[in-house]
Image (cartoon, rainbow, N blue to C red; front, side, top):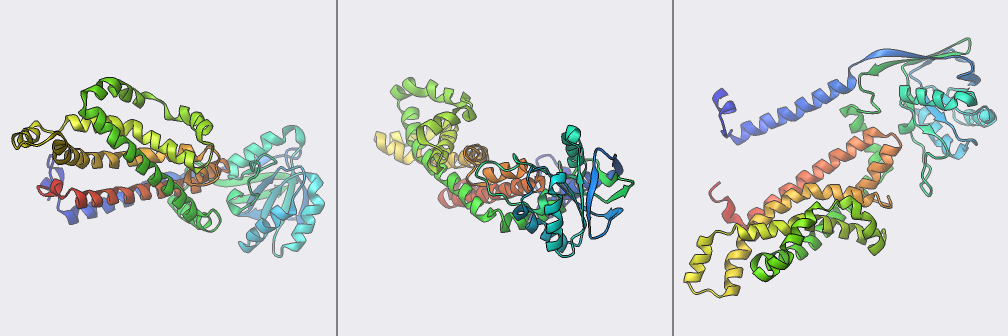
Length: 409
């Protein structure tokens, strides 16, 4: 068995290969969990003047165990934004450290009375060093800084527990805040653990319409591919088969591959607007610039023995194209299209960032901007899964339409 495992260009039985493949996935997940979880305990202290306690409900608290941390830096506190979030925290039976402006103390007191079971300690940072203090707390606890620029214009304001930070323990002695965290070597705000990523799927499905965004992106992908194939195949055959058109356009077609596609996004916006049509056409263009030269190359690779055979049988020019070139080229192009599936997802993400109105790319941008890194990883895993499924479907169709490719395997 050991010889089979390390034999040069050897092959394993299908069952053995599957078992080893599963072990490899589990091993990668364990390494990921280890990297994301190993760390040390660190402390941060904030003296009076940096953070000042100005309200505590219902009684003064000197210690917060496993508190949630919210940095709310809006000039005016919006109770409609915060009450649903406070209710979520109360349901977790955890205290809350709310860091905001002292002018909001009356509104905080009112909300604390409305949300049963919520323990709030509110604090204010002095204006001169507020930004520095908030950034330090944000980096240490993982809390987002909710300010007037946090949500983009026109974006729905919806605060969730994903924006909250956490700390193992916060002690308040003589007005001094002592934060204590078991901090990972790599912060969860940079590399969430597999468990955190798995948990993020619930809000993605319930609040972010993940299924709808996936269908939108897959629709763009399929539309772009259909247009690209319908254009690239006939053009490729014309350029590859006829010397006149090859001399006229072959160099130009090869040159298209060097165009940085992200740089032409502005042109497509000017030509087609910012709707779905523009995104489909941009994706189609991104596929065509790679697929068209490949079609020409595949025509050049058709073996001469087949052409000599049909020539001996007296085939016409059209019969040569239909019986030799089209089957030979399409059987190889199907493999090339499979490879381009992975590249196409890059262009989909770029296209969806144009107006951020829908799709997985827009959802990744929104999650990353709001420091929801666990959601970013979750969506990336979804894209990998979609790509894997697409690849298997291409293999299935390839076996269906070109079965002779697999007879000797």
